[in-house]
Length: 112
Image (cartoon, rainbow, N blue to C red; front, side):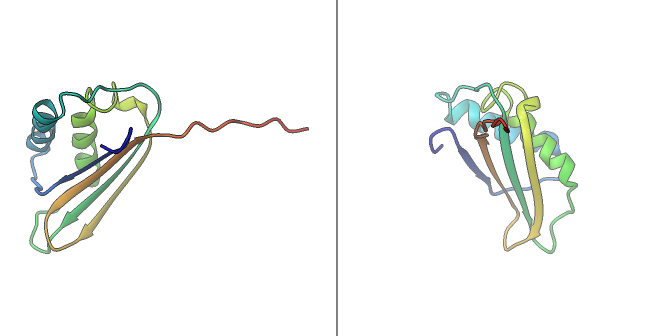
C-alpha cells in the first residue's frame, strides 16, 4: 500500500479463477487486516504475465477473479471500478500484477 494505492503481485497463475480469487482473498484477510474498503470511483490495472508453456487465460475471467478478490478489501463493490485495463504478455514467470487506486476527481468547468 502506498497511500490509497494498492500494488499487488501474485507469483502464480491458475486456470481455476475460483482458486485465484480465494488465494488473494485469504492473503488480504490474513495480512492486511488494517485495510478497510473505501467508497468512490476506482481504476484498476491488471497485467497477466505468462510463460510460453503456461495455460492460456481469458483476460475477462482473470479480471473478474481479481475484482471479486478486491471487493470488501479495497473497495466495497466492484461496480466502483470505472476504469479497468487488462493486458496479457509473455514473460519469464507466470504472475499477475495489480494496481488499484481511487480515481482523481475531475472538476467540470463552465464555458462562457
